[in-house]
Length: 236
Image 1 (cartoon, rainbow, N blue to C red):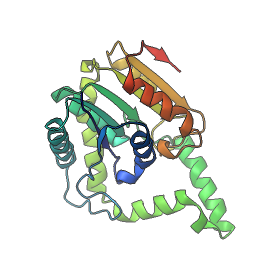
Image 2: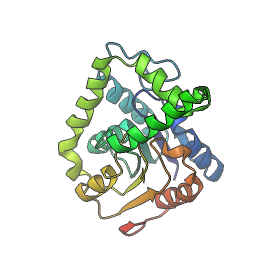
Image 3: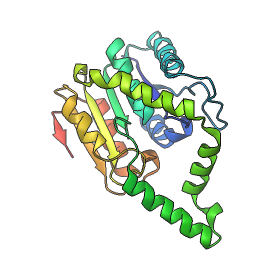
Image 4: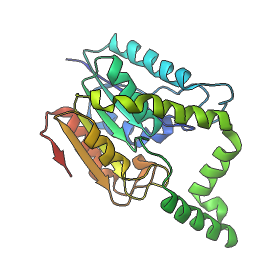
């Protein structure tokens, strides 16, 4: 049986957000992996006039194309991509999902302030260019129109009422130091999703870009094992 994986990045992001996990999957499987760039996203953001529907439809198109080439489809969704993955599972036959920092809730003020405080300290020390978080936030703040941010919120709200309709196997991975999506988002989804086969993995050191966490080599194998075999309901 030929297996395909659709990986969906997050809001204002691009395929690079999931690339470490994609590299791991490519090194350890022979699965066909597709990582589309959603409209307006990528290295250069052009989000003006784009809507939630444009991102959802782009993911749908990529899924339909993949379904034509494989017998079994898994979907990996990061942040907003996790919410889009849930949307796809409501409409299409998907065998399993892995949701990474899924944006069922967003903005963890305490951790965000901690991260921004770290950025401020680097600025004072004259080391702001060395701080990846500073570079990411400054770039995105300049390039993200307010209407686009509102479309992101609207997308989350559109899918939220249907979490309980999800019954396929789901693995959720969440960093406890996420400054964008509170770590409580994953237990929230875990409780609302009605799958009997579901797994919750926490990264103690993980921030929002969970695929770049210091302990990713711990959870990468766990997520792959979940995709490879049927597991009983379990919390790690």
